[in-house]
Length: 284
Image 1 (cartoon, helix red, strand yellow):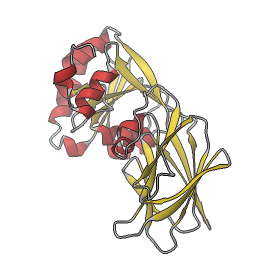
Image 2 (tube, helix red, strand yellow; image 1 turned 135 degrees about the vertical axis):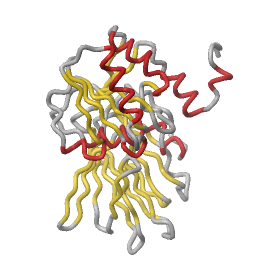
Image 3 (cartoon, helix red, strand yellow; image 1 turned 180 degrees about the vertical axis):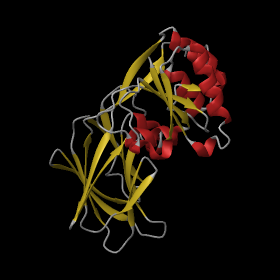
Image 4 (tube, one colour; image 1 turned 45 degrees about the vertical axis):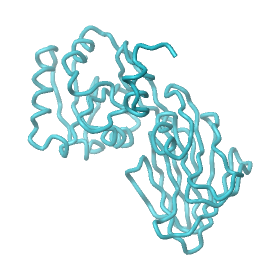
């Protein structure tokens, strides 16, 4: 890897102490042509054509935002280094930077592809296309009443129900809001889509797991109630009464760099289930 890019979330490193430390350590380990620094907030405006590896310094939100912002021509891997709170999507925490760079130098890593969702929002006179690495959520406003949702899968009606909302998630997003709403964990390398209701008024609507090439179309019958579509918990738009929301697998996946000793289940226990001390080293 001759050219390494570093995307930093400036709100998590206001004095550039972490950034400068990481740059110094990379220069000590690698004989690089160049290191380029990018602000994570405007990464979509930057030219990443010559980058062999993009290191993301931030938390899960930073990595999610960058994954959505990268253009279709970017094919290089992303290495997430957590300097935030949870850091479930990151390959390593900043405290392990020395070990991580040693493994990177020795080639002790692999690439994994994470599927993304494509979301087309269409209403009278308005069309918008969005991407999501975690999920797309349709949910009522804080003071609104329940909303009636109608869901089609591959052109066939799946369910009509009333509730607070709906979560359409990738395997990566199965550990996020979908999990909180009762959805299943999906192994991240799979290409599947889950649909999980938020507080359904009846038991007629249950979580369903669909194949990755399914096309999902959702209509929200809410009359004058407020309802919002949110992508990865970051970008939100208001949905009107006649809006169609169509979701499918995005043609572009995200390539993440993980190290050879990466243990998804250990990360799941320590970051999500919070019982790593009880389980580590035990055969259940």
